[in-house]
Amino acid sequence: MHGETPERDGAAPAAEDAPETMAEAVPAANEPTGDEAEAETPARSRSLAPLRMVFGAAVQYPRQIALALLALVITSAATLAIPWRFKVIIDEAFTGSASTDDIAHAFQYLLMIVVILGIGTALRFYFVSWLGERVVADIRLKVQQNLLRLSPGFYEVNSPKEISSRMTSDTAIIENVVGTTVSVALRNTLTAIGGIGLLLYLAPSLTIGLLVGIPLVIAPIVYFGRKIRAVSRSSQDRIADVGAYITEVLSAMKIVQSFGQERREGERFAGVVESTFETARRRIILRAAMTSVVILLVFGGVVLVMWRGAIAVAEGAISGGTIAAFVLTGGLVAGALGALTEVYGDLLRGAGAASRLAELLESRPDIAPPARPERLPEPPRGSLSFRNVTFRYPARPEVAALKDFTLEIEPGETVAIVGPSGAGKSTIFQLVERFYDPQGGTIRLDGIPLTKADPADVRARIALVPQDGVLFSANARDNLRYGKWDASDEDIWQAARAANAETFLRALPQGLDTYLGEGGTQLSGGQQQRVAIARALLRDAPILLLDEATSALDAESEQLVQQALEGLMKDRTTLVIAHRLATVRAADRIVVLDEGRIVEQGTHDTLAKAGGLYARLARLQFADAAA
Image 1: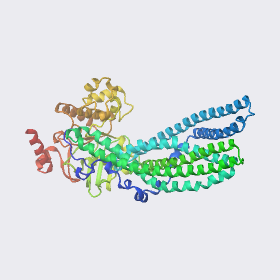
Image 2: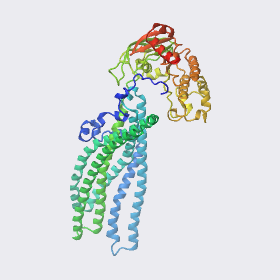
Image 3: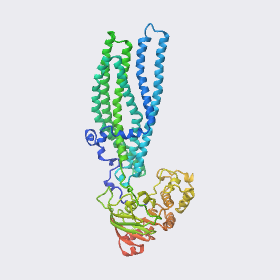
Image 4: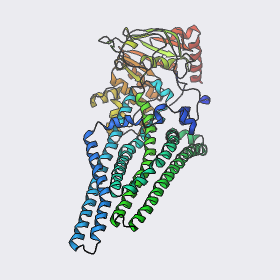
């Protein structure tokens, strides 16, 4: 903020009560690990069920799935064909009676299989990778579309920085699941099934002995899998903490360096990183133990079976080519089963990521259009009516921001709202735009209750100039036409001229095409505010909300912009929030709030003579100005 920074109505709790970082505000339910976390984690995250959302997105592309599956079948078949060709080569080509042509044909077939395997692998990689990227893109779009529908109250209890982390790190995990893990799982499953079939054909008795050990492999997968599930979700939460912390500190770097807190922030970040590392270490230990045990059991079983096979070869029961093919195929089957253990752990991580994204996707807005919204009257009049309104913010239900608030605002009237910090001024603006609904009373726009109208229709009749000139990471043109996207350049320059912004905008290197930086950092605070005013001018709405609209301007610019605003306010209903009382003297009416109630109303002269709260505030400000 620029200039005076009053306490905003409905803002977060006081600093001494707030967590040191937004990352620390992550719900406590995400923090336990081990058995405790297993008990507290929602039931859907205790299995692979959350991945249904991911696969539901994938099945929208049946052609790519079919081609990927075809490539998987081809590569698995080619992989298993290699041991079979070795059997043929050893039994036929390595005999003394084999001709040169026989040997050539044997190896030519083997090379052909290798070529097929290479092409199939390339096609499999392309299609499954395409699916992974496409599914992640679709999920991100759906989540973002839902986030744009959610009410501001949702973001009081859910940190946007933590949400941003979910949209990046969690979707990256899902991309890996769809683009790699599922492919590996299917490939190894096909290889294992086909390999076992080939083993049964080659040496049934040896294969039966090999299959006896399969339950010994499955048991540790089930045991360790339960442990890994809880730690995997906790690990993702800790990664989100890192992202949230970095975003918060880097966005406030001027404050950090101004107060010399670089060392302390470094120490705090080290604590967050170490917490992330410790959680990841527990997950790694569990996965390593599971992989080690499974591989020991699988390859131990293979060794024992091969021992028995070697004896069979020595006794002449099977050929050398058969035992060679059996060994190679057994190795492929063992490798496939061993890889499936790691795949299961990746799928569990993907399920945890999917469940976190599903929470965002399944969230529903508190403020939504009614089933049959009433149409606002045309042409718009711009009347506003508050009748016995009581409102409490969801994050602070114990404190009423407005109490039995009643106010009638006529079309075209300019009403200034003043009062000490925390009196409820900004809350009025929040309710007018229907970011929240009051717990008691009604608010009407042109005679229609806001709860019966479509919120989009209500907001289309309102132009807002916030206290901070909120700009986006875009060029000047897109920032100016944000409220009226089809505005022409001529309209844009007219609004900029009226807001005293034309001179510095024309001086920009590329004019309206100049990128303004993240949050408009290429402009000064006063310039940002004038762009915000021009944006509201361009919207040309019947109701104008000015929240400390000139707070960031110097005296000369303030005077010029004030003149522009006076022209803008003609024939419009205008609500003005101001701490600087000099800016509201010309208002048709001044409403004085204190602790959510109206304590005075009237013109500047009337209230100044009444000797109440307004007069006291005026004396303090004008005395400071005179000093």
